[in-house]
Image (tube, rainbow, N blue to C red; front, side, top):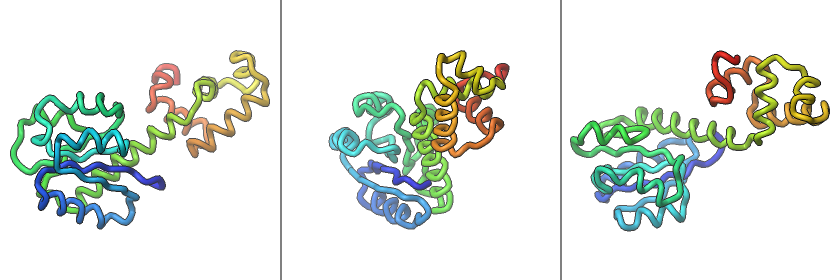
Length: 195
């Protein structure tokens, strides 16, 4: 991961919060910018101000049903939510979270979980960089169409299609039709049947 990921850590216990912060500082391969709060009332303000990609939160801090409301009110529908477990908690509640970190996890386990989440966020950002037209060009490439056929179908010049393909390769760092096919299937641009 090359970009810095913003994380908000929300835990009422100062001792636990400082412990998690100390563990996060060990991760030299992850570029993390961490903000903290111990107050549920202050959490929404921090989320609105910082716009984090990930929030690590003790579920007891916000209650059983507040997570979807929190994401909505902060205007962060794609924010990844990590449950910080310090006590036993209802497993149905945990299903609302993208990941779970326990106070009994090792630093390596926490590192691995955050690496997966930050790489997912990076993939989402790259996908958002593609224009609607670039996505249409990808679909044409996957269907085996030539640049000329794609240009005719989309009412573009061949030169424009070639430029779109160059931009797609640059943005996604994918340089083969097979790679684009996998990308399109994973990101639901096409169905398996179309590929």
